[in-house]
Image 1 (cartoon, helix red, strand yellow):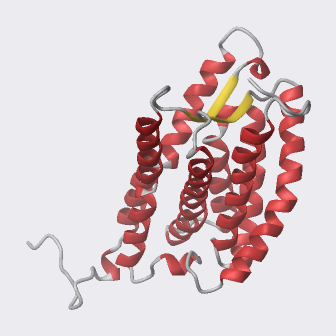
Image 2: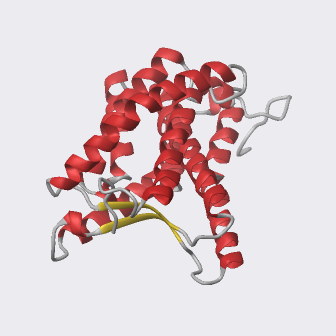
Length: 266
């Protein structure tokens, strides 16, 4: 029996994409990306809470040097890490193209740039200020580790790499956790509420390495992002908002750490 049959244009007929295939591919995408990050974050969290001392006395470093004292090798590792982290997004794009949809179907394209930029900037302005306040409060009561957004050497490529890292985080998270996951869960028959909970809990899970505050704060952010995605039908504004938030955190920490009293440092 023939294992697979191609349509006349070389694509796989949509009717062959059974619920089992969609379920399995979704699990594989998550296992190669943010699902695995969630498991890693959980193990890291267990290690933190079982270590002597409070959570706020421990640090979670996001962008660290990969080759201290060897800046060119360090740069190579940084760029490799950013590029390899985007591979699951390329896989998602391939899987969506297979069903004749593509990334445009989740609103990740250049058809409405000013809409995406304006809405994204507005989201970042609202979430950014409240997010900082929540982090400081959670750390103050011992629910969060001290987050160190960057610990790169003071070299010429430091801030460009931090910006690229922020963009990579944003694309991976919003394309996979919002656009792709919600589409697949809908195709698998999940209710809108169940899909919202799954997406939001997943977002919180891979931030658990920061502590309980990181989990709760990002889960709430996930609820807001799912609501906005369903309202606008686009992940573009979410990618913009997330990029601005991470750029502000990474670059802002690099510029302000040790120079202002309110910003905790390791």
